[in-house]
Image 1 (cartoon, one colour):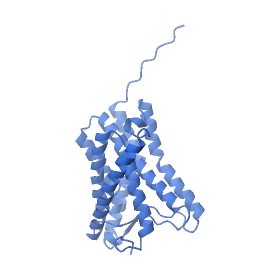
Image 2 (tube, one colour; image 1 turned 45 degrees about the horizontal axis):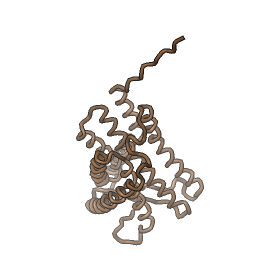
Image 3 (spheres, rainbow, N blue to C red; image 1 turned 90 degrees about the vertical axis):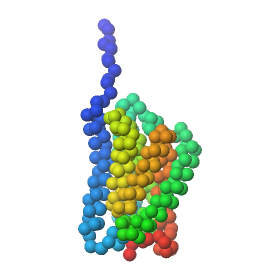
Image 4 (tube, rainbow, N blue to C red; image 1 turned 30 degrees about the vertical axis):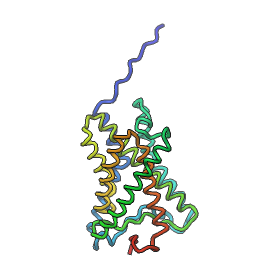
Length: 262
């Protein structure tokens, strides 16, 4: 008896790709963009200026109960990475892998060197831009961390920074650009879509947060197109956030130039 030969499955059509993309964004950064827009609307309509309001990035989830707080922190960090796992699964089903977007450990030192150089430039410029926009009244006071003084504070801040970097760079750069390329979008349209999305889900911080992150998005997309890897972008983003979170924890209230909630 002859075993029938199965024809290779055709690649997903444009409609399937569009639906997949919308679902992934709806479960991750697209939903964050909508949430950020609602939050910013609330800030605009609240009495007082934006600079008099605060946006807390890492706060306590169970004040006065450190072990329960830790459990919630770890739960939030791990579940935020589920969309990344979904994207990697979709790449595997496509016949590709995490390596197809440069999310692997094949070049750890090179990725780290590039990431560190990128973080130094983007991080320093971003801080100056934030201070200027807040002084001009276009930004909320960003509070990178408001965790209690417990032993797990800095490990959780580092884990949160890594989670942010992996989620954003894998989805809003590697995955999004790959899918838009498959849908026939031009590089310019894809760059605009990626950078606007990045800026929009940071709008809860204010206009400065949106504009600054859009600019960062443009730089990251251009470098991804050049390098073909999200690894350096993940490293850069993680370093920027680690310095922001840990630096605020160490310096808030001790130096005059760093804004704190009034």
